[in-house]
Image (cartoon, rainbow over all chains, first blue to last red; front, top):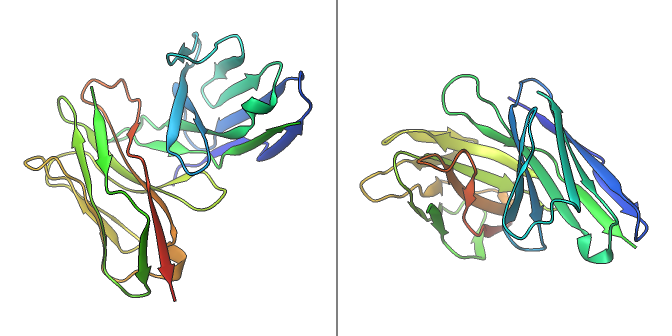
Length: 117
Length: 113
């Protein structure tokens, strides 16, 4: 089946630094990818919709200058957490829409644990 | 807007018991419906999907039928295993959502040997 890969799976960074998380669709092209944040024992919170070749669409309350999203190719979207703070520590998950065939299925990456110290 | 109401957990079963996790939805138009599973510390895996009314999605012994008349997509498995212990999310998109998934709150399933 379709695979979406995230990297890194775990990252620890110092407060004030920036960290980049990559999301790749490995066997399909994705014009649309999504970035989520998940707090412990909670459902996923959509942060933004990443559109290939155009600006991302952010959900209400998500700081676009803090969470930079770049979708430069049909198989890669990146999320950069800028000037990270301990409260940014979380599980970040991306997903990508496989538009081929029927159903437009959405597949998720493995997630990335970010710890800001 | 779209919404998904999912049976609240946690659900604890013994191995080989029958599982049902209820899911109902509200959406305009004709959404696509999904069940995702999340194992501890991991991302979400697509478990099954259905894209139109009366479709039955199935995978790994799990089944769910798209019931438009009752706006439901209940997840069932006839005989659960310890390895099925995970969080299960019901989700939908379409019907005007621009492909943004709307999730239920998730149901934690624990299967004891």
